[in-house]
Length: 120
Image (spheres, rainbow, N blue to C red):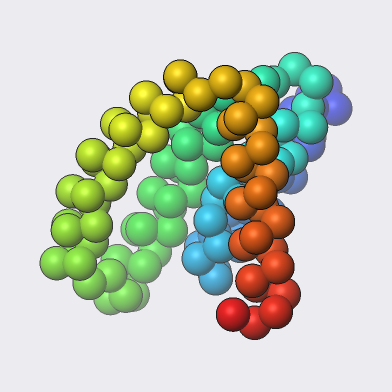
């Protein structure tokens, strides 16, 4: 495997562990790191994070269901809302200027990180 393949494997493992154990968003971990790879644009990093999240979230869903941790009525309502939000978000991803997208991602990482560090 080449260097980037090892980085992506480690990134997926780390983000998957954090995502499934403490609910920290898959994208919060992956997107900033993916954007540092010279082979990906910000749009590609976001799209890749969304697609690969299917695998980690699918595995976590199976385990959490097996242990009775999923409230399916809530999951259904959130999932239905997420369908509309996903379509709208994909539209924004395609149409936002690249620099604006990078700034939004950077600002969110800073704000969310600060809130977590300050315990809010």
